[in-house]
Length: 115
Length: 109
Image 1: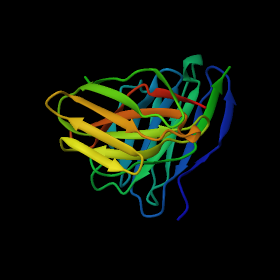
Image 2: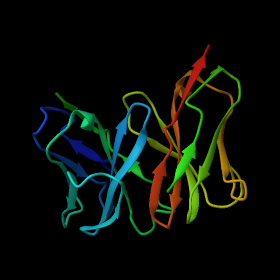
Image 3: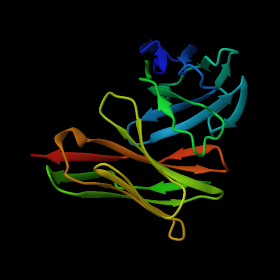
């Protein structure tokens, strides 16, 4: 079974621009979660989608948004980029019935650099 | 809110045993997971504890005490390839995840 894929792997943007990142979950998985990882901050939860609906949301400003398509692929968008948005963005997929017991499978991440 | 505390860095020698602690404060606690992440790699699942006690998977074991809001990951017979960051994560309110800042484990020969 193919793993979680994320595109692009690397991205360089300038302040004020917007960016869209894509995540394709493992076939059959219906839940996709997004995380931001910065040095010393661990993984900070952005949001989780299940069956095209945002089921959970972390404490990030409205500039961060996402969506999920009927094939479970997900995109996240960051508008009006700030320097502090430079990070590794990880997505994770799981079967989705119950995150409490599901294992999350992470993709390789998209490294976003904001100049 | 949620909070997790784990040491930022631990160093041990090859063949030794190391314990990485994780204390948490959370409402609606459901369980505690551990993930391993090598530099430049994606986090990978190691273990999950929902009930008190020890779960063993090969050289890795994970422990949970719900009454103490405490858990740990125990790595035995350390190998150089175990050098990585280890994250504990609480699952709360049934389907929400909160990750700690991670513990960087350095294994020396």
